[in-house]
Amino acid sequence: MALLLPICSVAQKESLKLFTSCNCDRNYIRQELDFTSHVRDRALANVTLFIYDIVNGSGGRNYNLEFQGFGDYEGITNKMTYETTANMTPDDVRKGLLSKIKSTKVCNGVGSSRQN
Image (tube, rainbow, N blue to C red; front, side, top):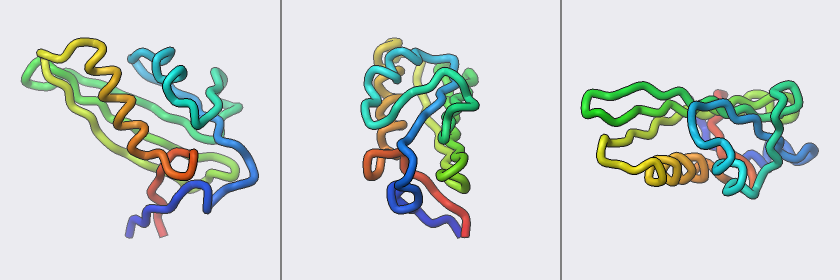
């Protein structure tokens, strides 16, 4: 059973340090996500975000976003998808990805689902 929990109620001791790995505009994501600290070394992160993309049948792309927590954020996971079309501009795509990432934001952290 999946239960949505605000990350701030699960772990308040350590501030959120996000590592992002993607074939996307990481600088844009870093600039626009102001509710977290961004780290370049995965070992320093307490939450990782991996974004995998593949071409879909319509010429757009399907993005799979996977959040994984560590340390105080252990057990925090979230998976979601974002689909684009061939007609979308690169700016539309990056804004859509950012919107999808921000949709997980809860209590100045990354929203999550936790298995109980």
